[in-house]
Amino acid sequence: MKIVYKPENLKDWIVKKANLMPVPFFIFTSAILAKSEMLAFKFDVFDAAKDSPQTIEQIGQKTKLHPRGLRSLMNILTARGYFEYKYGKFGLTKISKKWFLKENPDNMCSFMRYANEVQWNELSYLEEFLRTGKGLQVHDTYTEEQWNLYPLQQEDLAKMVAKEAAKMIPMPSNPAEMLDIGGSHGLFSVELCKKYPTLKSTILELPQAVEKARPILAKFNMGDRISYRAGNALTDDFGENRYDLIFMAGVAHHFTSEQNSAVSGKARKALKPSACFVIQDLLRPETSSRMKNMVGVVWDMYFNLTSTAGLWSLSELIDFQQKGGLVHYKVNKFKIPYFVQVCAKKE
Image 1 (tube, rainbow, N blue to C red):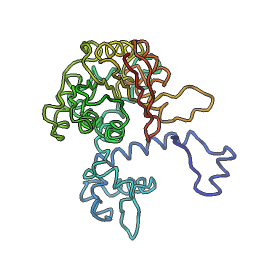
Image 2: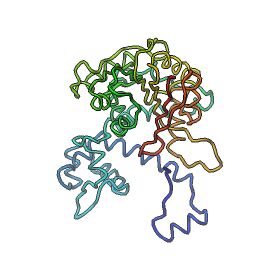
Image 3: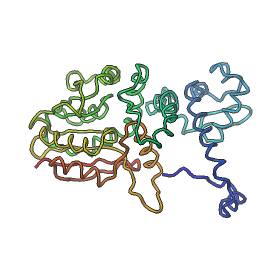
Image 4: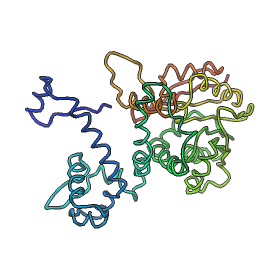
């Protein structure tokens, strides 16, 4: 997936083909678009029009925004395809109804609130990171409010892939126990426990995240089948010959190569024979003369900025597991591009 300048007519196409487009001009334009969209979520602009198309005045009354600023914002959101403008009113498009309304189970509102209130501010450190190579190590520095937002945005991301993930993960018949490393919200454990009635899951998560994530897991009424263990995957022992699955989603990009190998070694010790350690994550694309995975390269930069680690390539993830004494088994690809599960077995 790429973010590109898309010509809208023949003149635009000619300008692009002739390399007449002043690219730097559009770089800052993208920043204005991103911040405007984040603030649309903060001020509940989409929910203001959830029941029917609304005028500027009606949206302004609901959001408490000034008509002058709101009109500029609504024009941006309309140009982006989030609203349709007819007969003086703004109505939601299909994409907005699915992803942007709080009442819709697929909504990404918490993710966008986190992007606006946390991630946007983190980007101010990017220049320092480029000079020093040292990231923020956000899990050591988050405030109370940032920890409140963190598991909620993680839940939004997990909703996109949790059901699909549970279908692909290799499991033995009638599994008894799994360890969910960094599972926070619990969505992956929930889907696996639904699929396997004999399964119980332990979520190993940082103490700060456990406290904030409990209300999310409570919504699923899983009783004692899913429990939390406050701790740290880098320092805690996982046990020995205990688990039918050890699963780690969205965590490897916070760890160095040495740490990922060490976690793989502990996973091997804790797995039952023939059980799997599954790393699920976005992939960093291998460097080439024509980089096509814009999503991968952008998030690689972000996780380098926040954790001094970044995304890993497929070959690197496999190598981590093999250095831990595991045997590579298979790679599962998601419908959403660039998400994978890298599965390794204990012999």
